[in-house]
Length: 389
Image (cartoon, rainbow, N blue to C red; front, side, top):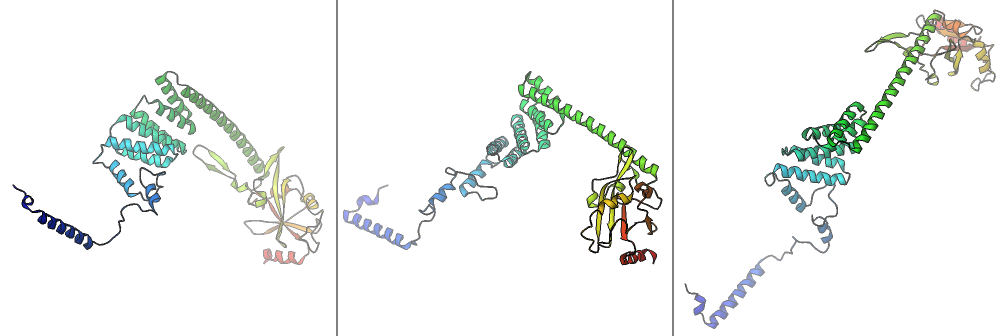
């Protein structure tokens, strides 16, 4: 086939070139004059470079959108159609190792978990993923989860010494000393003598001995406390003091419920009645309803009379007694019987034991309380009307 241009004259060729130039110019002029916007510009080139995977100085934080190019790489890296399950598991493992080095343990756990979800069937890879996740859980203090992952790694790979060591470390943290010693013994059999396992086993043995010793101490203390409680309850029963103590049953034996003699008043909390040389010592409240005031005697010996304490309490006039009418001689004491609602007069010259042993007295809130009024005062008359009307 011959070229038609070969038969053109020079003038025809010149005219054709001019026409082509004119057509090109018209085509260019016909296009819209829009600036190029798909590349980097002078104002944002540094920001654009920071988002390029090859020049990024740090990875986006959790929740931040990925730069388009990085997102494309990620999709390509984890595309199940482009990768085998083994390739995907290895990719997730590498990401987990990267986050682990940065101490981003929760991110690393997510990476290793995704790797395990691939179920690639490679025992080496799956055992490593389990053990690496166990290391992350250990650093986060999740020792039970770390132990479970270590056991899974050892199950997949029975000669995996690192998994055995991690399992023993978790047992130490969880105070499962006997199990930890078994893992150490198993690991030592695998590697004859592993210094780390020998040291770990020593710590487990010491921990077990300390736990057993503490348990013995607790048992001795419990028996001692139980003996003291029984002695206290016996003393209350012998004196006929009504405290409302009952027996309750736990899983093994019947025990005494002492809640009825635990003080409720804020000033008496933690100061329960106790025995000293075979005698009861009580926390006692003196109530002054006229002024809404109270006096608290932390240790009131049962053989001591009320007058002894009144004289000590009123050696100096209380600030709230503006009329200066409260003194040991003017005070009349009472207690209220819970069931009948009647007031009973207390002789200030009798002992605490004598009053508490009366059938009409019931210790309430673990703290004996007595109402103090001024004899012959208007307030006393009004107060007593409540119990006579």
